[in-house]
Each structure stands twice: as structure tokens, then as C-alpha cells.
Amino acid sequence: MAYIAVLGHGVVGSGVLEVLTTHTESLKKRAKEELIVKHILDLRDFPDLPYSDIFTKDFNKILNDPEVQIVVEVMGGLHPAYDYVKACLENGKSVVTSNKELVASKGAELLRIAQDNNLSFMFEASVGGGIPIIRPISQCLAANEVSEIAGILNGTTNFILTKMIREQMNFGDALALAQQLGYAERDPSADVEGHDACRKICILASLAFGTHIYPDSVHTEGITKISLEDVDYADVWGGVIKLIGSVKMLENGQVHIMVCPMLVHRGSQLASVDDVFNGIMVRGDATGDVVFYGKGAGKLPTASAVVADVIDCVKHFKTRKYLFWEDSKENYVADFGSMETEAYVHVAGETGDAAFTAAQALFPNAKRLLPKQPVDGEAGFTVSGLTEAALKEKLVALDERGVRVLNCIRISDY
Ligand code: HSE
Figure 1 (tube, rainbow, N blue to C red):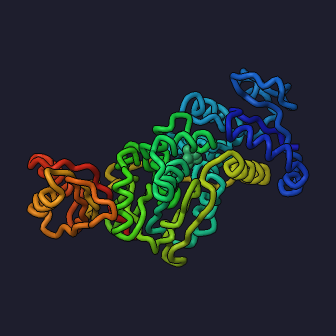
Figure 2 (figure 1 turned 135 degrees about the vertical axis):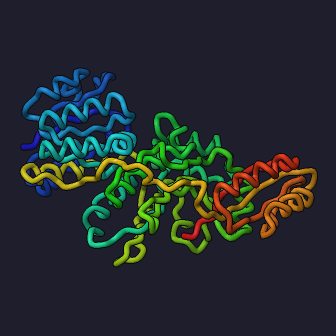
Figure 3 (figure 1 turned 180 degrees about the horizontal axis):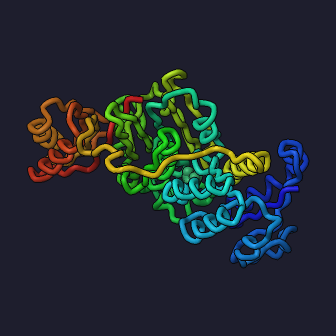
């Protein structure tokens, strides 16, 4: 028998209990042991649940229970999750987590503690919800040199953008719906400002390239400025707007990593990843492009990944499951401003023509886009062949010439 404790009984925690209690027999066959949840930590009471008697508010009860060998952390947030997970690993308990904030900011340290104590620290559910991606990168693609990863990593923003593109729904209504469906973070600004996607691309990059990348070193933009006019411009350009997290290994050993909304060509596999689905492209030297697709958020998809890790943990009690990366190093992340870029720019002036003429003086190669539903005084165009720093400088100059920059969205080459 393998005894488990679950920290947190929110959306994912209750899903984990549901999977464990409804698949008991098949899980027992796969793990070759019966999986028994002995404690659930939550500050709230759940008197109506059939397993209400195993709830506790006291973390030490779990920490000091020698029968508990696996702790599932699905509380989310950094504190107290970090302190609890660290204490568990230091006290001989393997940990499975879905907490991307924890893995992205403390992964190197926690992996080191797990290694020193010959325990497993696993986090398949932290990226891509129910999509297998951590295991494929660390095991199935292990024979490859991965050069690049790019993906739609946040279900909530993809759901919102899909509603804007397909149904012309406004941002607020689409966000409320995503929250209602249990996709969004407790604080949805982590979704819409790009921080959740940032944590996920940091985890994938750390795993693929072996060196921790901290979220605060990543250029991150969200989707809050995207308007239905931008959606229209993207359409006439030939694609859709997606929030993309990407990382690329450069020849000099630095990585170019960013999270931002991007125009993605209709023909790209990522363009047809809609609703709450995630799509992740991994470029390997032997495999070429491999794309992973599935539900990136939600109770049961995420719980499925958590429980799969629990099974793996049980099977590896005596031989630690190997996941590891080194801590970060100086100058590992390339200077964002020096990266070459291509972008769509949306501006407003006295007239659309005047705004575009002013833009042409700064961007001689600007190509104008003509939307299906033009708005008086606005213009949209694409620019290429310049660095991020030069683009930023020219947008400031444009503003100084009386042309308001409403948005600037990068163009992807995926
Ligand atoms: N808020 C996250 C998302 C949940 O929408 O993708 C899954 O990590």
C-alpha cells in the first residue's frame, strides 16, 4: 500500500481525489500497489464529502506521519507551498505538484533537495494540463538536441482569444466564462498578463536545456491590450492572434525566450489550437518538429497528469525518478532588445492615411494592412528587419510625432 497526502482541495485537488477514488482498481494494477489517500490539507471544512474524515488543517500531521511517502501539492501559489514541499522532501517524502509558480521559481533548488535525498520531485501537471510534455521532453526526446520550443501554454487566454476571434465576444465576458469553467488562476491577471505562460515556458526551457530560467528574466506581455480591431487586422494579414511562449537556443549558447501575443499564420499548426486547448511545438535535431496538443487546463485533465506522476513515484520508490536541471547562470538569457523582430503595428492619427504616412518616415519598409471593418483615424501595418530595441525606439518617436500606438504584436515564424 502507498499512502498519499494531498495539500489543497481546490479545483485540481478535488479532481485528484475524484480520479483516485473512481479508478481505484486500474490504478492499483498500474502502480502495483494500492494508492490510499490518508490526509488532505485544507483550511476549509468539507463535511458533506464521503472522505470528510481525512481532512486536516495541520501540515505537521502530514509531515510527521512516517506512513506517508508521497505528498501531492495542488495548493498553488508560492507560499506556503514552497515551505511545505521543501519540508516534505527534507523529511523523506516524494512530491508531486501541479504548481507552475513553484517549479518555475524554485525548481532548481527543489530538484537538488530531491536528488540529495534520493526522492522524486515530479510536475507533469505544471505545464499543459493533461498533455504529456514533461516526460516526453525528459525521456522520449532525450536523444535529441532540442533547439526551440514554442507553444500556446495558457488555456484561459486561448479560450478568451478564441471567443474574440470566433464570436466577437468582448474580453471581460470571455474571461468571466473561463473563470466559471475553472480554467483561470485564482488571480486571473496571472493568465491575462502572460505570467502563467511565462512560468510554463521557463519550466520547459529549464528541462530541455538543463539550466534554470527564472520568470523575471523573461520578456513577458499579456493579451489585455488586444482589441477586436487587432483581430480583424490579423485576419487580413492571413492569421490569428495567439499568446505564445517561446524559447530558442542561440549559437552563442544563450537563449532567446519570451512570452507575447503573436500573429500566427493560418497554415501553422498552432493557429488551429483553439478554446482551452494548448499546443506545444518542440523542435529536435533528430525528430524535427513534434507537436503536443490537448486540454491545457481544467480539473480532470490536470488531475490525470498528477495521478500519473503519483503512479510513477510509487514505481520508483527505490530508484529515484530522474528529472534535473542546474541553477541559472549569468548572461544565459540573451538581451531581448538585441533580438531581431517582425511585427504588426496598430496606430491612430488625424486620419488613417496621415498616421501611416508618418509611420513610413520611420519604417521605410512598412506594409499597410487594409482591414475589413476600417475605423476612422486608424491604420495597421507590418514591419520587419529591425531589432526589438530599434522597434521600441521608433514607436516612441512615432508617438512624439502625434501618432498614437494602439498596439504592437509580433509576427511568428511557426
Ligand atoms: N490558468 C491556467 C490556464 C490553468 O488557463 O492554462 C492551467 O495551468
